Amino acid sequence: MFQDLMNTEIFGGNTIADFLTLNMLASIAGSVVGAIVIIIVGWVIAAWLGSRVRKIGTAHAHLDNTLFNFLGSIVQYVIIGFTMLIVLNTFGIQTTSIVAAVGAAGLAIGLALQGTLSNVAAGVMLILFRPLKIGDFVDVAGQMGTVKDVTLNFTELASLSNTQVIIPNKEVWGNVIENYSVYPTRRAEWYFGVGYGANLKDAEETIRETIMADPRAHKEPEPFIQVGNLGDSSVDFRVRVWCNASDYFAFTNDMNRKVKEALDAKGVDIPFPTRTIYQAAAE
Image (cartoon, rainbow, N blue to C red; front, side):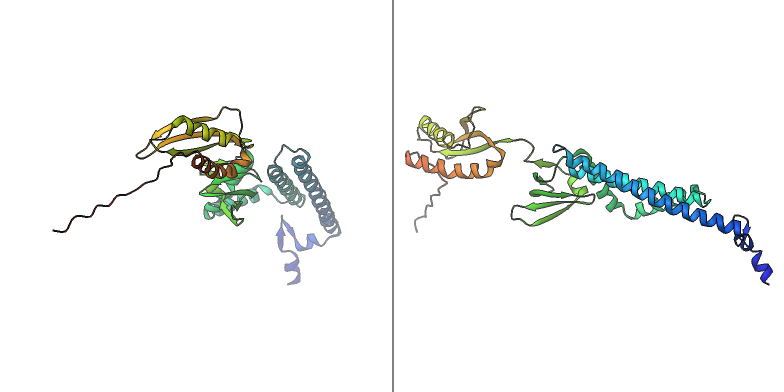
């Protein structure tokens, strides 16, 4: 009974008795020590190279940290994966079948997690092509706010009311992205209506002087102030003036009030819709 047990084949044509020989035990011990050394060396190299790639983003101000953090993680995981394959080869295990099994498992997992993988794929595209960066003020997927983080799965915004907005990356990559932070200047635009009986020249000069007196208004490019529409009850001036992107919202809102007050001070009529109701005489 004992003899039959010792002659039982368990691995690579070797029996239990073969594994209990001094030579076999020494061989196994050497493989274990070698595997431990390989794992330690591989882990150290992976951590060092990953750290070096990440530091490229922090060393240069014009480079995006998000991109190099992502690349550093990819480098680290790839090296660890190769290290594990080398360890398996050390014990004489054929890795071809393992790679095939991992591939098949990856395919099955991919089919089960299509939505999540779509977000990851979109996250990779966002990180590589960088249509938006941390700190940019954007309007995307119907949400407006400041970009706080871009991960492989989602993009985080801080809304105008400073609430956290989480958008899946496939919604970000698959929609129009309006980025207000890319260019240093923006063109503000208004419509100001005056009555048909108003002096258009005086109205135009009043609008021009009021807006251009504000230090936020750029003298170049030349401001555009012209009659843009003849409405039902008003003559509408279209006004376009350039300003710094950071001043845009405050500048446009301030000018709405200041121009109205300036036109009032000049006695320029600003019309508004009126309705006349006639009552039929009683029979």
